[in-house]
Length: 147
Image 1 (cartoon, one colour):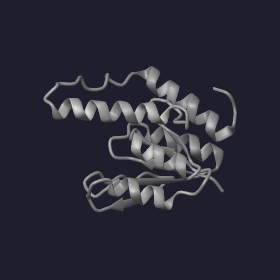
Image 2 (image 1 turned 135 degrees about the vertical axis):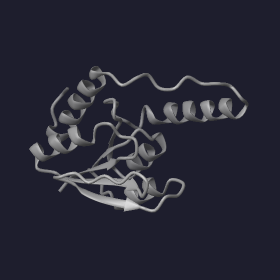
Image 3 (image 1 turned 180 degrees about the horizontal axis):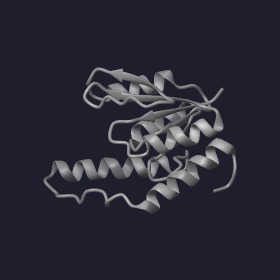
């Protein structure tokens, strides 16, 4: 049976994900580190001690092919794809084998620029449209329908 695994640290769509996954009858696992503990009805929370990428590695080791992974982390999305998962961003972007390489390259370029002292703009403020795009994309994955 497929499940939904959430990289919950900094994730604004935890409650929406649980609501939609419960309609599909899927188990939800929330992964977070010890400084961001989440407890939600309808989901199991797995708390990992803080450490570089500790949550990401625990989540990927727990996932099975076919599981849906909610994350904003491109590295975790790449690992989920490699294991046959269906990673989805909190803004509704379905990560694919076609789009993950350019996203990882962009992340590396931004990292290098920041290391050289270039100031980067932060992400745009979350909008209602972001929630709607996420809901449509997750619904599509859960029920195998076109968004």
